[in-house]
Length: 338
Ligand code: ADP
Ligand code: MG
Image (cartoon, rainbow, N blue to C red; front, top):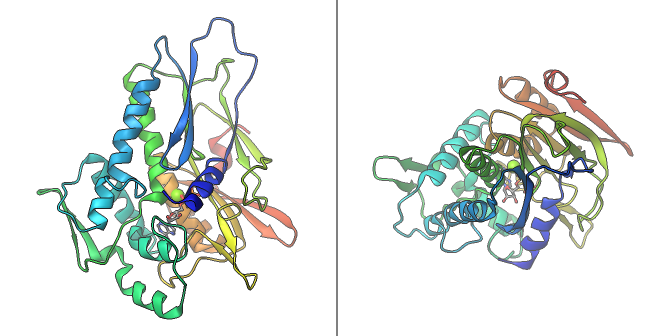
């Protein structure tokens, strides 16, 4: 894993701040599991009489072996190297969701963006010199329609063998869903799963209250060390993800800012007034993919896109001169107690 990605991932882990009630009850069974996975960190709180940290770790390792492009033995890495490999359920579920969001967004979201992500220095291969010629050569292989999955033989087929996949835009959200499901299977009702800033929360915190979740103010912060909240929501059931361009970026010599969200249609990192997009929807994987999609689209298109989806709501933070402006979809306020 390259150091840049590690640094970026640590930043990403801080995209959302969690504010968990303090003053724990004397007799509760709330436990915490914290560690690192796919170049980011996770923090999981759950109520259970038994320690489930090893189950959580095992679950995340299985997931990593399928979908992490930073693990060279993973299924997705083997597919990227055109090795003969059978897909598993994690891969197949991710692929179906990714392709569905690509269709819905008409290619704003696209997991074949990997070669461009690498070229711009945000991927699993070292950054090269970015030239228009290189971008032009990668655009024809950046197209979700160029890759298909056969669920009969569990194989991925590519129109061009240079096509590579990057599940980073929805993997953390998906991992939250998987861990939450594992906890529920073990009988947990009260839990908060946070992986690299994406969140699934259910039930109550250790104080017997709904979970409090902060939406981080998008302040320019490449170190990821500043955490101020734009808003706090209280919830007993949420699958939420945030994408932002205020931490994961670099400044080129000429002063040009380059963010990690790439528009697959132009081959360039996006530049919008939209600083962060927080999405809640029916799964954290979907929220994660939709949050990235919003960042590609920019503020106006993103709002319209989310308003047209029945199962998703958005909270967009937009630069307005030197102020921040919040725009939410119509269903956002009704969904939560603030
Ligand atoms: P974060 O990692 O901050 O949660 P995202 O969920 O938006 O952010 O994921 C960003 C990552 O998604 C990028 O680093 C890149 O690997 C990948 N990516 C960038 N642009 C796109 C795109 N248009 N479609 C799909 N994936 C993308
Ligand atoms: Mg995402």
